Image (cartoon, rainbow, N blue to C red; front, side, top):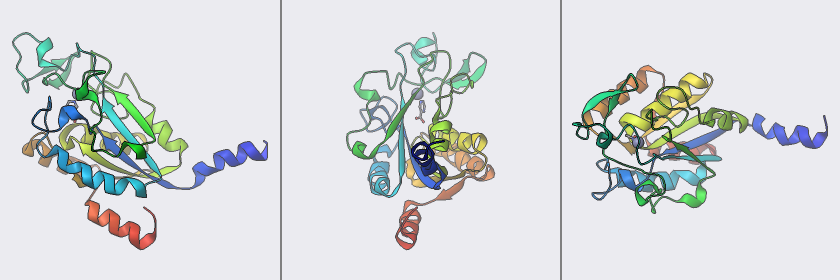
Length: 229
Ligand code: VGL
Ligand code: ZN
């Protein structure tokens, strides 16, 4: 193998850390949002402060077709937040949100997008919801995020963004499941739940799965001590 090609891959041997910024989109933020997450805007300053310290910085974007099957509007008689089934899987029926190409689907303007290296879109298949940044809920549409992280030598993932009880939760759990050697953290003060009870359940579930629950101040203090994440 030529030296050039060998050395271009050697970079991936240097262990690095990724910040995974989940669904910081207009549709989940503010009173005017489509599926507003209480306090959702409050995660943005913490995420912006953390971003420059991470070598690998990926955002996800919920990106639904107009007729997505998770929308209550597609199920006669269903109201937003009712529970039902979608193609045999339990499903919360959501208000229409994050429709492809609309303002609701855009990343929030206060997020420092200049720092984001890759954006993973998910939720395009109308027949299944997609909470995790790695795959839809039915496991039919992998996004390739695990390969992206492996190729870049990522050994530690820090997950932040919205919402703790859905997309943050399933992204962190999938990271643990798909890449067993990965250390996975959720930055608790840089995320917010749709509802307090499912938020508390998510934290328990994450703890049981071996995901480390940390605060952004701890992460920043660790960086200033060690000079890196
Ligand atoms: C989300 C519900 C529906 C999330 C996305 O980003 O947590 N929640 N779609
Ligand atoms: Zn969605």
